[in-house]
Length: 489
Image (cartoon, rainbow, N blue to C red; front, side, top):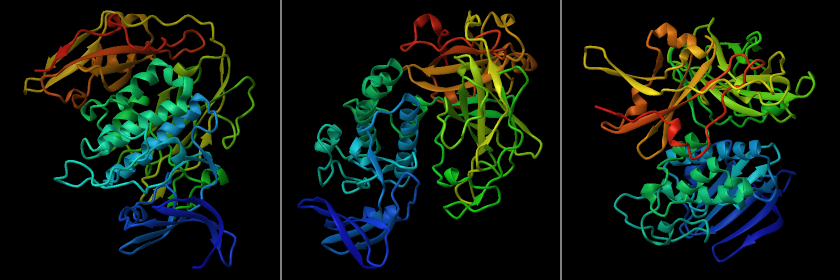
């Protein structure tokens, strides 16, 4: 393929980058000529991801690498002011693409706002892998010390070999920059500071941990529901209205949309019917978005900004045709008005891609001034030995009778270092049905043998027009909000 040069974008001793177009066409590309042999680019070509520019051609020789890649129209992160929900979308998508790279052993090593493009489709692309590398066994330091001053981690200056924690350091600096004043909010400040610890062992050890800190996942064992905030798959066919049974832009079959999304009467609980082929590994998966308006006009799913988005994963094996999923959204009802939610089924990325979003009926919220439900009190741990050597742990509290059966409780568990390790959500009805007067804690959350743990509880009202959900805890969480420690035996 022959190309016509349109514009010189960058030139240095190490690289020459042009904007080019096909000689016989109008499509534009980025062409890079890099000094040296950059083995990372063939790896990227075999690792397509919606958060990365597409690589059309990679040519390697002993002294030069030539790359033809997708031209992304957009603006660098940090060049435009984003709302808090938009910033959180950037965080999700950035964590997702870094997670995919790290799974392949690829470290970017030059993460900064100018290398994150806010594309015209509303999603990010991570660019510029000239400094990227794969860690090598037995190496104590990197051979080449690359990165951008101010964003590069200490180990990039020769103190140690870089690994995934190098990108986590740069991620913290980058988020501090693009969040601006919002980075001073306690919930963000704590996460960003931990990313930027000078000692790599004191940072988050994986991007999954960073994402979990920003978007705590939720589990509901009795109902077979595990709710977790996770990244929406970036699919352009969302914008063009892909239909069930069609083929998405990535060549995968498009899943059917969930049927009958609806509010459960006068509660703030969202319902929809199962899509058996959704999710992966036999675990169904969904993404929901909550919309608000001061009138009952339906939102435009392609244009209107949602209040918040989240994920729902079912329990292993719960992929029956006639299964109904539910999630309480009442904690997000803060202003009087009209709320809708939209939901899509999530594909496995191998056989299926995500369905279109479908819209629910409307819920009118009038409880802006309603009293707040009382906070759970008298928190304590309860252990139960099954007799076969298996110890079950339950989070319990003393004022369960203050709530209705459909009210839900979010138990959040923290380890001795103060890190959030996971949570579990049950309704009062679930708790009563189990006969334990508390919420079972998944043993996987308490995996550090001998380590102490404690929990907090937030209550979600199922009657949002009569009561508010209890407000989230401040950050840092006051000691009086925690349960006593639970020393694992």
